[in-house]
Image (cartoon, helix red, strand yellow):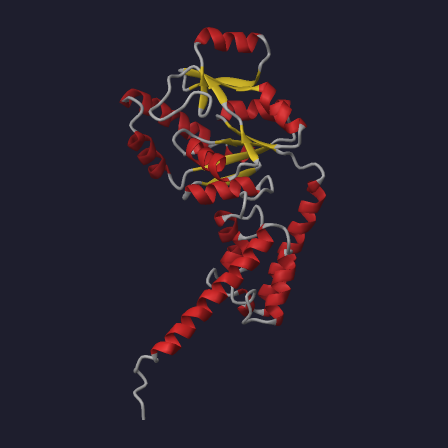
Amino acid sequence: MPDSHTPPPEVDRAAASRAAVAARRARAAVKASVAAGLRSAVSVLDAAGRDPHGAEGSMRVTEFLMSVPAIGRTKTRDTLQRLQIAPVKRVGGLGKHQRVRLREFLLERAAISLARGARRSRLVVLAGPTAVGKGTVADHIRRNYPDVLLSVSATTRAPRPGEVDGVNYYFVDDAEFDRMIADGELLEWATVHNAYRYGTPRGPVEASLARGRSVLLEIDLQGARQVRQTMPDATLVFLDPPSWDELVRRLVGRGTESEEERARRLRTAKVELQAKGEFDAVVVNRDVAEAAREVVQLIELRPSGR
């Protein structure tokens, strides 16, 4: 009698490996179709119920929810807690009551999205406290989501290492900034950290929106409030740090400010963090690519070629 611990023959291992790869690809295709809006989340849930061992049923419920547009890691975690579903559960392995609760949740989201679709703005404002990584997330969106126009702000501060004029910011002096204000060329502007002024040139934003192109503004909290007043249909997204300690680590780690400047920015950040309730959505920046994906999903776009 063969030993039960004897490893399977090489041919069996190869076949099992091929089957595993095929299963992963099938699950990835399902997630991609949901993210692209080609399949409804409810239809995937129903398919998982009919065939618990198929591509739909073998997905973890966490993966499934994160493929639904505008549901990121944080919202997935909160939703599963509220629906009393363990994150490790497979979609095909949900209990009867869990499946009913999840189906009702997905139907409700679909109805809300349909109702809001006609008035959904293509203008998204990304704001948050200092050192939270707004610029890094915005740069990732610029490189990976070319359908989104990332508005370039004007600023009176000097360039940091690696920043390029006209790409990261328009670096101008105080006289030029004053002229832009006087001529009505700025959609919003503010003095940040009691030091430098930042503003969004109005022309490129309005022209892109008129052509139906999506626009992302990466600005400070004061600017976001101004945009809310002038363009109430804009979607305001608050970029949140994973923790206060991580925010401090990022600010200190980038080494671009003096100790006095860091202390001033951290005092401001404590105030800014209290404003997240003013925003339409909150995205936690644990991982740059994931945070960028969540932001882009809020304007219902996908990366080019994916």
